Image (tube, rainbow, N blue to C red; front, top):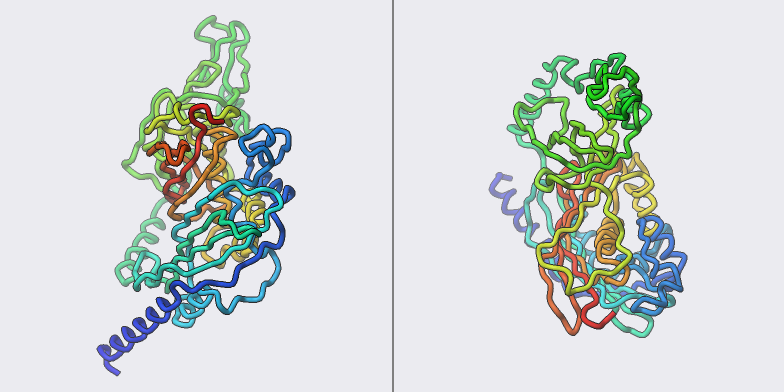
Length: 483
């Protein structure tokens, strides 16, 4: 067969596949019943995994004083209740998403990634409510080509009701089903050239330069190994000095000791060198002069923060970076925000107000704990070998954990009586164990809706690979005389 004939047959097959997929739009699955009603142990486990400390979810006394008058479930748990957990469930032959995925797999589109997730929370869920979720396929894209490959976007909508048939929320999830893209000859040539270029770099330039450890500075580097930031202190007058000196410049004493710094600091100034790029550095590379709470200044790196969000005067906290097995360096990142125990009011917030940054270490405990608490037992969230087979360096955070962290971030800023009412985010680079995701947000809009104070916040969660999540979330804040 000629190439022209092959192309026509391929187009015919794609047209047929698209028609079969579009025929599934509007079809609904059988209602998926939750195995358990909304219950306190599951809520507590979720809060423990996500780090959520709002007492209205776990403390009956605090909940009784809240606008709800009783314990309620965190909004981000909406999609958790109807998941099967770690047990096999008989496939629903009428589920349109399953039927669509089967058609796609048979056509060679076997790889899947999440693209967008949008949740709407109609109201707070109460203990004892028995939920069910009904899924429908609402959109199928034409054949699309992305950086991952060619494939189709499917959008599924799950509508949740309680045992009385009352609508309590919805979840719209958009996924991309694709054939992985093959590298072009030009791309392969560039990769090979890059490998050859790296091979020419001398070994001593492949690692970060080593400090010259002297008698006067040994205490500092020994402190780094012990994960302590040791600042030289004069035993005579108490003056702090950094870099270390051989004699106190204030009183002349040779009695030099050290003080362990608290790790709290503010950014005094910074610069972002971009050229020439160094093979041993991680970029973006931000050099900052930080002012320690103890009163002296230290030249270091600012990490876990996109360059455009770095600001003079921002609060910082100490972290130690294992640049390689032989070198541990003190660096600084945005300080952990303080959880508000008093709820912000609608009248007191303004469009443009920025939330403090929140760096989150993506640990094995967080990824596995979040997956278990959200009843997600996909192997890439639990087994390192499975994650590596999927092309990842380590375990991957699931979307429910990401949603939970985003909700916690806004709730801790707004206070215990504020309610997250919706989330609409685009999923980007994966959150993999060993990385750090930094959340940032700002108020994009505020308006009164049906007597409620509603704010919309733009949201971003970035890691070393790029943006993990971007989008918006909505919250209800008390207003006027309302609690």
